[in-house]
Length: 58
Image (tube, rainbow, N blue to C red):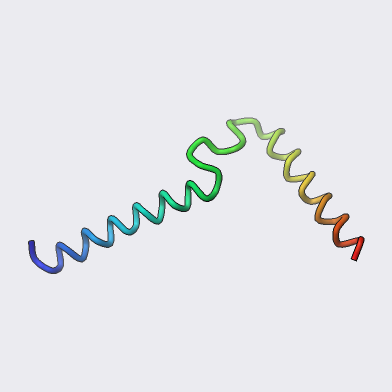
């Protein structure tokens, strides 16, 4: 195995590990909506209202 092949292999492995870490950190492979956009929209609206209430209290 020569050096360029080893470098490419390491970059591919690092890329896969980074992608898996990103997916796991952001809700996993299942996602949170499961094709239910109304559920996601309601959750986002609730988070926005909560942020707005916190900003008003300051």
